[in-house]
Amino acid sequence: MDRSRRLPSGRGALRFTLRPTAPDDLPTVTRMESAPDTSDWLGSTGTDWHARALADPDQGHFVGIVDDQIVGFATLAGLEGSGPIELRRIVVRPDRRGMGHGRALLEAAVARIREVTPRRQIWLDVKRTNTRARALYESVGFVPAAGVPPFADADSVAELDLVVMVNGPDADPEGGPTGPTSRKLDA
Image 1: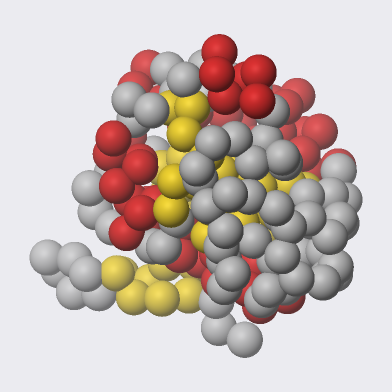
Image 2 (image 1 turned 90 degrees about the vertical axis):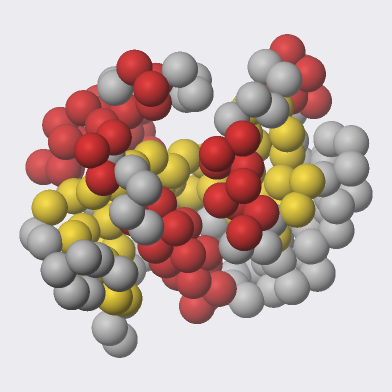
């Protein structure tokens, strides 16, 4: 199955592809998240964080490719359970922002989840002041949860001033899992 899509560009359409992250990609991924305008929004970072994510069968780690270059990455968690899947992190290289790569990466990550588990809810948390990210998430169907759903860490949500957002065929802003257990994302 072709997992790429076309992005608008002044010089013609660019092809965006989502693929599993390889260990050799980790230096590029960690450089992306260490940019000052990125690291301010993140919690734990670094090569060890990503290596643990790659080794964990409950997590998925993907990079977005345009013109044979990594332009961003996304991490997922909760793949082996029956509850909601967390979109744990999504980052686009600072020099590639505003070009549609973030939207392409988010849409591709959601589509990857929907390929293997169409009925499970997807959730994420985002800092309340990160209005740019919140607008992107809302534009692809995420809605703010009312209160703190049972699958989110209420203490962290309050302490870090986060908004929990949900997406899914039966997205319930009150929270809670939807749909059957599904196989993990491994492709």
